[in-house]
Length: 245
Image 1 (cartoon, helix red, strand yellow):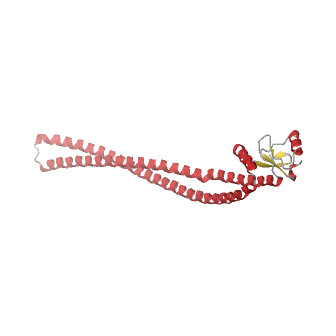
Image 2 (tube, rainbow, N blue to C red):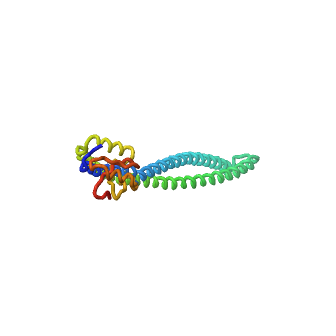
């Protein structure tokens, strides 16, 4: 393939533009804000799940507290009834001992129920504190996500501006390059990542490998309009005064 040396040098400008575009695309895919958003959203989901568990446990505990309080009230009511019977003196003498024994049993039962209720109340208080901590963690995670989203959007805006400018530069360069040369450039770039590079000091600017003597001899012998490719990576080698030929 033949192409004027000045035209070949245009490939260096095109390769620079494409490198900038590739770098911009990579930066967009690997912004640290993206990882921060993913982590924050996962943390928020985990904390919301934990909050649901806390609320469920609190609801169950509230029902248990209500049941316990109702049972305590029942025991107290029965105890009050028995005491009134004794105080009224209307109970036959042979039943007094039975009522007194029942009162002792009711007092022990009430004490046990009140101890259980106290334990339930302490557990509910601990759950309330746990719920407050979990809620704060949810708020913190959501705030961090919101902050990361703002930072990501600002970074996206800057990267999109850069991409638009480089796309415009690329559009201006393409008409200057013959179709067959451009097709070769795009083919190499698609497979190797870099379509053209400067041959500097007998080294390929794409793969950064030194060109051996045999290949250098062939390059020296080629006409200035010959399109030369690196035997190692396939990139189009653009020759200038820096090539060391």
